[in-house]
Image 1 (cartoon, one colour):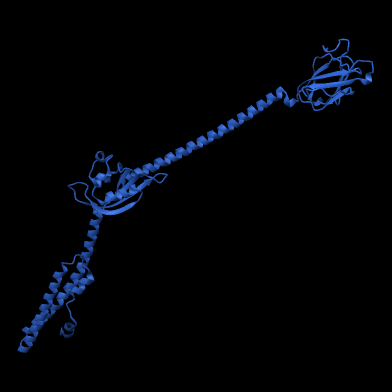
Image 2 (cartoon, helix red, strand yellow; image 1 turned 90 degrees about the horizontal axis):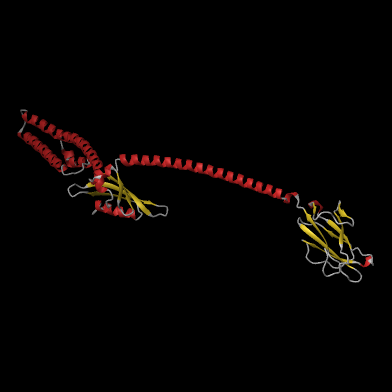
Length: 386
């Protein structure tokens, strides 16, 4: 290649040799017969020699070089006829050289193009292999992740099925308890509307299921302590009360024991409630029967005592009467016997009066009754000849 700035008769500088650390790639005065030299990456340290074919003071010739792809500026003028390059990266290079003689004439530029081939791990096949490896790793990771997700999904489905089955069993148990408990149960929302009741509740309130659905419980409990207990539960407080209430205008009051309990959400707010009512009628009747039995037992004990108390004065009267019938008794003795008979009659009369007083005692107390039936006085016991 010739420069238009110089006469064509002035020769151009040229590359005379290319050497690696272990081999000679080109050497001589003839130009290489290839357009672009390809150099393996392991031979990326080069020495390039050059010359200017002038025979007039060749020792005074100076050179400038530059390697496009590595540097853009020309080097300083030096008399060295070679340049070393080490660890050149994989790419295309153009080596340029020009000379200057002792008359400061600059030659045309001599050029030489070469390419440092990439190492095997930077070739297109290596990158393709890397891409395939990365794609394979991504595929494996995705497959493993999908398998893990699928496993977690199956485990979650199994867990959901287990919890659902457990919840269903709990609902069934609750339903059985709800329907077959002897207690009246009502489920209501945060506004006091009836959501669900069992048959026992319907029997107590004397309503049909259709009539009570969505009914405000204020209507059922109006004018009773049950209403206050219901409102307390809607305010988050559990309440237990015993009261009596008539659910219709024509029915009698029913003795009830009731529990109203709130149901809270995860934030501690009341969103529903449960009420449990127990009819105390049968329990009170059983208690009255037991009390009556106890009273009858005490009455039996009192009857035995009364029989004994009546038997004593009767025996005395009988004995005194027998003495009166005997002959030979003096009139003074008869008067004494008559006084004793009268005293025993008075004693029996006093006992009868005390028995009449026992009828006014609502709950018989055996000890109190025995004290009341004790008609003896210390003087009587001391002076009684019998």
